[in-house]
Amino acid sequence: MWKTLSVCVLASVSRVSAQETQDPSNDQLAERAVELLLEKTERYHPDPQVGRMSEERLGAWQAKERERLEELHEDAKGLGDEWPYEGVYRVGPDRRIPGGYRVGGTAIVAEGLLEYPGLLKHEEQLKAVRAAAVFIIRMLDEDPSMAPGPKRGYDVRGWGHTYALSFLLQALEHEVLEPEVANQAREAVEFLLNCLKVNEVEDGGWNYASETNASPFQTGATLLALYRTQAAGFEVPRGLVPRGLQALERGRRKDTGAWSYSVRPGQRGHREKMHASSARAAIAELALHHAGLSTSRDLRRAVDGFFDGWEHLLKRKSQQGTHEGPYSIAPYYFYFGHGYVAHAIEALPEKQRPALREQLRKVLLTTRDEDGSWNDRIFPRTSGYCTAMVLMALRAPDLPRFPDWKEPKSEGEGLKKAGGR
Image (cartoon, rainbow, N blue to C red):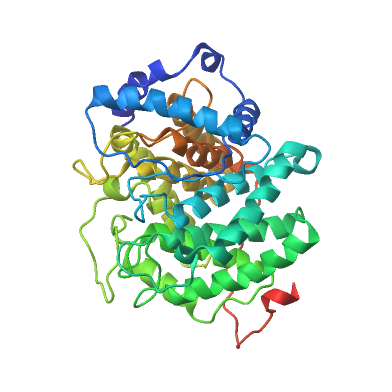
């Protein structure tokens, strides 16, 4: 397998500049990532939607789009408050980026900056994190697309709900918000918990787009955020986590460790192969692991599955379209997969971690762009989200582990309401 992977790695070496051949340390990689993220903050205004195009036209469009975004970033200097995630899905008559992508993308980048060392001593970094918190809270309060729901049709608000919850919990934990904003953040946590309750799919779990069938991606990410919620002393709506865990368990093949793309109510088994689920196995297994429902052996199988299937993920990275190829892999799961594999590695027995960390670092270096960023979409704007995911992957050994879920023995035991934090 790794002979094949080596071919893919060599094929991507052209993306690596002379700076990378000097084998930069993880600290150097992370420092450059933070610099780029601070440069990419913006104040979003609706812009034209881009459809599929020829490869020749795509390259020309990307060059112009980078120039346009640089101008936007320059105009927003000192005033930018978000890092929108951009995909093919747009909403409204002006075809704008949906609120769930704007909030979710901003929350992920802000959490990456929040967890980077020296936040309180770095004025620009702290300012960006605080501005992101204000933006997210405002969007939750004012944007109808971020209301609890329930969802109807294709609807991505769930990404925003999940990652806003994760980021605001971390911001409160680090005590970096101004007092008034901190109070608003506590209220937002309670609001977001209700959103997750309202948008739970039948038989438990969550879906990143539709209102039916649990998605291991969305369910795993949401469960990890809910574990943080409980650990921070907030009250998690009863039954949400157990039902989500049951949905995840229905989506896993016990014989191979492969995960279904979506889990139907009452589903019993599936035929997905590990290569098709290599970017979602780690987050799903990690969520089960921190609830005591997955062993270290199960988790290691998910990590190995990621590396075994990496060449297939690479083939779809930064390509047009969504679910294509023999394993129906969408480009946007590339760095998502790397990010959660990094966390899964840190949950393995200590003696297994060093070699796997280095293995992950090597594949990340091969796909780093010349400016020091990462991107798995055709859209230049999405390098913010991707770079933040890699930043957290590089720093995973130094980040706190996700807390373990502890099922309350009775209603409200050991918990307190959001306003009582």
